[in-house]
Each structure stands twice: as structure tokens, then as C-alpha cells.
Image (cartoon, rainbow, N blue to C red):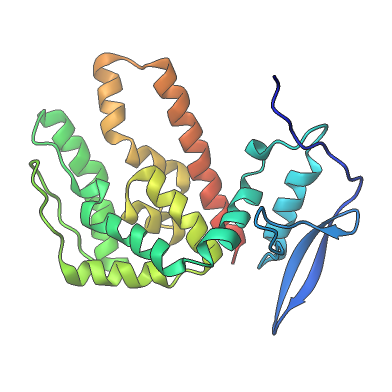
Length: 239
């Protein structure tokens, strides 16, 4: 039996400015009716640019509504229905990546991979020390070696400082890459998202060079890459 899918029921998609307390927000209206989140909350967006991005996704729906083609709408829903009501918990969860950051976990061999990790990852850790005030150190071996609590505290506070919409985007940047530092490098515009994604794939790229590429793994990686780039785009338009 085919799964039921909601069909397009509107003719006009429009962005409308609304007053949300002392602040101005933006809604997307379908034939004059505002879009709501899955939890039935008002989908009030912080910037006109984000509202226009969400509106363009709704306008692009033809016969049936396909959420897979609506990443900005999904991100906005997550910000309102999930992050806003548990901001502290989400920020704490993401900040914990700093103590096991991808950029800090280094191979002991082969030497070619060791050198490649150093070449690509050390400059980003150096940048984080200068720009963020947090120095994370590389680690080798299988045993966990905690990072400096001072550095982790700085990164934790910076993570908590994000708005709900920023944090929703940052969540994807960090969890998809496995790196808190790469997430900050993108939000701080030190790295463009494509470059940051390549850096997050240093180990995988090396393995592909040695053993060849698995088609299914490549397809899964491409889906993640697209989500990573979209998260960076979402972050840009919420400010």
C-alpha cells in the first residue's frame, strides 16, 4: 500500500511581516493562512531572508508535499519545536563534542595519514586558539584524554550564546562533521562549508584512496554533505 502524502492545496505563497512582542518576525502564508510547525506552533521566522527561503520551498511543491525537499522549513520547525524548549540541553550536548573533537583524534600510523591529518587539521586548531580563545590538543591512542577544562568552558559558553535558530543550524554542522571546531569555523566564516566538509572527511578520503569507493557509502556521504552545506546556508540567513 502506498504511503499517504499531503497534497498541495494552496495557490498563493506569500511572506508576511508580523509583530512578535517587541520584535518583528516573518510568517509564510498559504492563501492567507500562516504555516505552522508540526507541533502546531506559529512558524514565526527571525529574518525576511529565512522566510523567503522557506516560502520558496513551499512554492516549489507541485502535486504532493515532499519534506525531503524542504530543508529550511525542517530547520525552522526544529528551532521552534525542539531547540527553543530545550536550548540548554541541546547546547550542552553539542559542546561535549569539544572533548572528543574529530580534529583532535589522530592516527599513529600510517605515516602518510598522520602527515595529512597534521597538514589539514593543525591550522584549524591554531585558528580556534586565536579566534575563539580555546586551545584543543591532538591525541593519539585508544584511551580518552580530556581536553583543558578552560578551553571546553569557552567553547561551551559560545555554544550557549547561539539563538535557537542559530543552534538548530549549528547542531547539523557539528553532528554531521563530528567536530565542534569545524562547526565554529563555518559559523565564524573562517571556512566555507565545502572546505570544512572536505576537512571532516580526511580519514575517509584516505581509506577510499587505498581501497576504492563503496557506492552506497558514497551516496550516504553525499546526502550528509548536502545537509551540511544547507545547514551553513540556514545559519547565514537567520541573522
